[in-house]
Structure formats: C-alpha cells, structure tokens
Image 1 (cartoon, rainbow, N blue to C red):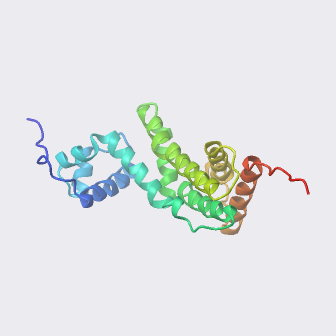
Image 2 (image 1 turned 120 degrees about the vertical axis):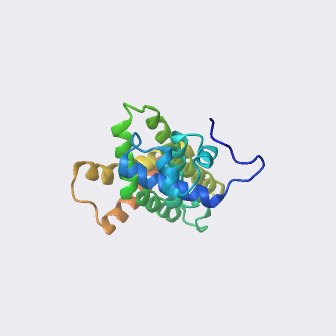
Image 3 (image 1 turned 120 degrees about the horizontal axis):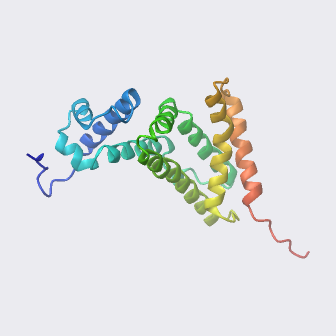
Length: 212
C-alpha cells in the first residue's frame, strides 16, 4: 500500500517544515546520513511520514533543505546590510557572517559528515557544493553587484566573491582541520578585514586619471 498524500490544494504547513528540518539537522549530525531514516525524522518532528515526503521528496532532498536553511539562518539578508558610503565596511560585516557560518560547530560537523560519507553517497558532495558553497557564493556575488550599483568599480562580481570566500575560509578552517588553537575574536576580525582589503585591491578597477 502506498502512503497517502496530503489533500490536493492544501498549502504546506510552515511549522511542520521547520520542525522537520530541525529534527533532520539534529539526527544527521548525531547518526550520519546513512543511519538517519525518514521514519526517525518524522517521529522526532511529530510530522506524518507522507507529509515529510510531500515536503522534501526524499532523504536527499531533506538533507539539501537542511543545509540551505543553515546557510540562510546564519548569513541572513546580505543585500539588506546597511547602506554605507564605505563598501569595505559592508563586506567586512558580510565576511564576519560567513565566518560565523563556516566555523559554526554544526556546519563543521556537517562538512565532516559529507567528506566521510561521500564514497557511499557520492550525491552528498554535489548536494553540499550546490546548496552550501555555490549558494553562498551566489549571495556574495549578488552583494558585489549591489555594491557596484552603488558606485564600487568591481570587475567581476562572481570571481570577486569566489576569491573573498576562499581567503576568508582558508586559514581559520585549516587550523580547525589540524586541531590547532583557533583564532580569537580580535584575530578573526583582523583576518576578515585583511581578506576584504586583498579582494578589493585585486578586483576594484583603477580609476582613470583625468587631466588637470
């Protein structure tokens, strides 16, 4: 017998979706992808299993939604950062949010989960690339586009976003991977400012000098 489906035309319940993603995030981190079942998520979220499938399609879709939700929750609305005459200040705040995301213990554990299970579930690597890494790069590229509209002479928003995210992530995450002491708040802030400064120097077009 197939699972019954929700009645046609009934809009999805946002509360059930949020509960399912919260339960899934906890169970994926506790048990890993392989050992987390849709039954367990449905039970933990107090959501009917047919509703879970209707909302996310399958376990891979649920994992993808949970990854994106985590990125959205930490990054927030980058385009809604306070308008400033100083684009560097806007990018520094965006960079701080990005580091809060990548250094979040749950995000680090999820990254380790994907790396550990991708041989058995190769779709996880592509999923994490699309729903976390490329998703975040697109958000930063959009931020560079908005800054360009406000007068920043940026050459290539997508490449600038790629370079900035690589500079931001590199050293702090390497320290975590090696089990070395983490940077303190002041050092992290210096790191963000340096990464933003390097990116702007590389990608902001030089102004054409005007004859006096």
